[in-house]
Length: 476
Image 1: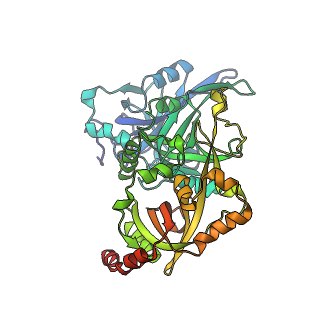
Image 2: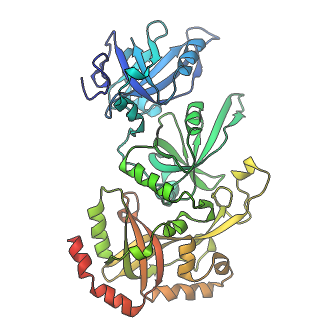
Image 3: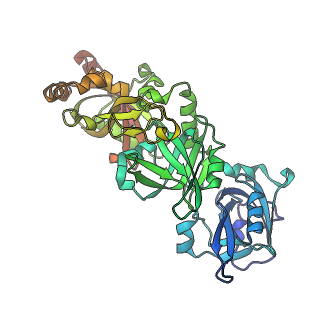
């Protein structure tokens, strides 16, 4: 038997091959779909029903199972267990996967087999506690994808509509879970939807939509601002109604709640440390600054040294911080105001097209209009004698402190005043505190947040730069 956590009484999923008989399999249910009915081609006017689920018995092996039959049988079987429960299956039919068709509509699995449960021959029952090894139960906290194979919410927003229609993985924290909403389609089919607001270190609000009862049931168990999820194979779409990117749970999706991974634990620590801070007060970066003591950041780098440090950090989930003496080489604040300022709903944090917009999410839940929050959202380039860091994020309160004006004051400026303000930074060296995340999906492989940016004191800059040998020694 392979690396299955099941006892010798059971056949390991890794050992399955088509047409095996008289099997007994144990595993934990890691995802499940709704029951659906289809016209029965063999019996005109009647329907056949089906549902499927994914079970796992080791870190490396999981398999899809499906049941077809009468409505009573299929619904009864579906109702007999939930995601996170361990089940024993006896006498399933082992079939070879139709790879192209299966993986288009079902979670991708490592083997070449699938299980088919027959009403007449197969049985499924939930395990009693003494039948289950603790290692088997722990598999529910292990994502089916490699733990570093995901987009941050900031990466998704930065890529924008280039990701429209793409299926990707997302690691994020749960900010809120909406009430399930029922609806009826034009052809009188009933449906439901549930909106989940996500956030992370890079974005304060991002929507994920669940469309089926099983995923909604799982989502209702999530505790806002205490739960982290790894969502494998969600579809990213541009929502024209909201003018923003959203994620959708689809038939391929498997969501791992509170993933036991280094990256998941770092994000969990982040949300715990910032739990008392309300993300509705502005951009995540504004309170990200408060969670980092700038006085504790002492290492001074050049641009080249930062890039070398990032290469050495590749494969590590932890970001790192440093000080850079450089001038801002790109600062687009004298064009259209919409390029520098975002309008966000005070109720849910959504980015809105205009200050006069009505938030499409809040308006569904309440007749009371929400106020609009204005915040800077700038991408700047910073340059020193060794190179340039592109698309550094300068947002929220940090941007206000840097520019020396509030958003409202900025919006009253003339184009000439904005240009003059810009050139104060383009011509002068600044002392910039940065937080750097290694991200293959970001421009240049780095996602960079500005924690503080002030015009540099020449004496201090000269002293700090002359002492850079210490930093270079550490990088060597």
